[in-house]
Length: 283
Ligand code: DHB
Ligand code: FE
Image (cartoon, rainbow, N blue to C red; front, side, top):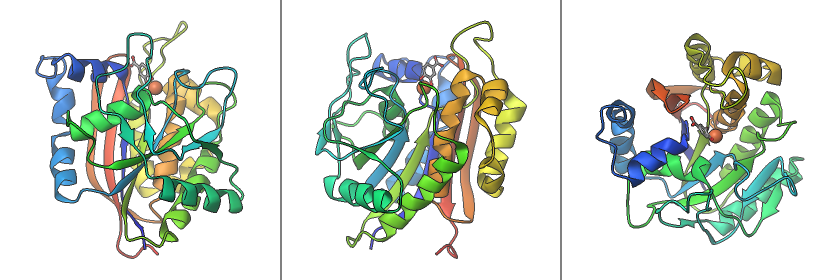
């Protein structure tokens, strides 16, 4: 059977992608950011997953006001890189896992989560920057990726609880897939940041630290967090953190924290990154 072996969360700041693509990772500004991923790169090289279910948001790159799915799962064989206005990033195309993706879609829908099935999808920095942070600059990505796009761009995004419960449904789906696959679930975006309006540049380090503590030890307490709290405390784009709850829900009751990293500033955003493993007792 397929297993959820780990969860990973990371910010997906587009300037990080530009720093990698333009060979600026060694600059004083960027070096400490990339150092926070050294541990992760070694860890993943030692136990590489077969598939990553990568929870991210599209930033009006592929989707637009014409079509705003709340939860969209990419079931295609491959996903090209979007042009976000400055040309597509020079990274490999993303190879999917249609069998597992269709299985997750069917299982989640029959479990009463009405996913949008997407058979043609291009992916933006929300998905590619996390891959670059963890895998560097390979000629081809070393894992299959199932993109799971969440609407956090146009009100109303899904609730914290709905995201957590979707994570649990994804766990059930993966665990009922007959092939023996090592699957990781990644959540991306966050942490506190606001890109627009009078509060642009907002960062809230104590609030981010508390979110990370609770994500590991008391995720149930995050399920009731209303949208207005993300907005007030973590800024308008802090709402991206609901996607981390999908990852956390997919890991089961208790987790071990393997790695935690937090860095300010990175572009306009507080950068957060954790690696979690389900504890052995989790069913
Ligand atoms: C920035 C962060 C994001 O999450 C994003 O999607 C776009 C920009 C930033 O920090 O600049
Ligand atoms: Fe974003």
